Length: 303
Image 1 (tube, rainbow, N blue to C red):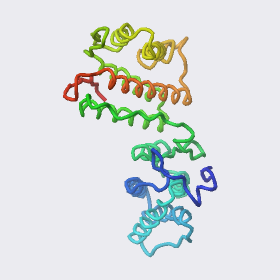
Image 2: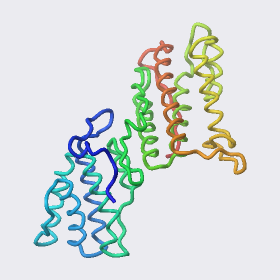
Image 3: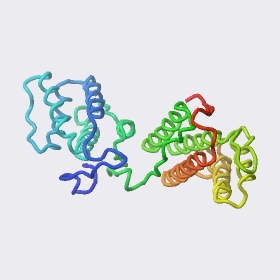
Image 4: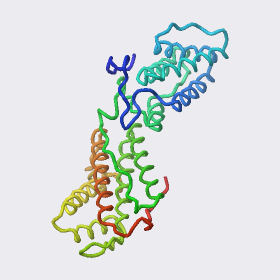
C-alpha cells in the first residue's frame, strides 16, 4: 500500500523550512542505496535491484525495463534514485513501498524497516517521518520550538553539547523512542542550568552546583520576576518527569502508579523543555556580565 500524503506533494513538494522538505539530500540517497545493496545479498542480486528500481521508476514517471545484467541494473537504479530525490515525498514513498514488498522475492527476505529509514531521514534533517501508512511533515504536524544559538559567554564545547543533544532528542522522537527523547532533553535542561553557576546579580551570587540548587538560587535572587515564575514552572515539570509516579524518565517508573508516556505527550514535553532552554539561554546572556572569555563547564555523561 502506497504511503498516504497530500496529493499536491506529488507535483510540488513543500518548500524547505528549518528542515529539508523539497529534495532529499545526496547523503540520504547514498545511504538508501547502500541499504538496497545489503538487501540484495539475500538472493538473486539483479532481481532485488530490479525490484527496487521498479518503484523508483514509478516515482519519476517512467516505465520499468529490466537491465541487461546486474551491473547495469545497479547503474540504472542509482540514476533513477538520484532523479527521484528531486521530490522528497515520492523518493521516500518509493523506498518504503519497495522495502515493504520485498518478501514477494521470497519469504526469507528482510529489508530495512520504518525505524531504520526514519533514523536516516532524521540524521540528515529531512522534514518527513514515516508513521504507519502515512508520511507526515515534522514541521507542520509537530512544530519544533527553535532554540537560539548559545550566547558568546559559552564555550564552543558547551555549544556543541547543546546542538548535539537537541539533535539527538529529535532523532529519538523520529524513531518512536519517546521516553528516551524526553530523558535526553531533560538532561540538557539540567546541563544548561549549570551555565548560571557563579553568576553575580545585583542581589547576590548563584552558588549552587546542580540543577535544584541553581534553580533555588536564581529564584531567591529574582523574586517576583518573570524568571522566578518560569523557574517555578520548570521545577514543577522537572519534578513530575523525574518522579517514578510521574513521567519516570530519571528514577524509573512506578509499576503500579506510574504514568505511561504517549508519543504526543513526549513531543509536548520535549517542546516545553526546548522553550524553557531557549528562555534560559536568553536570560543567561542578560545576566552574565563576565565577558566572552569565561569558561563554562557543562557536565557530561556517557552516551
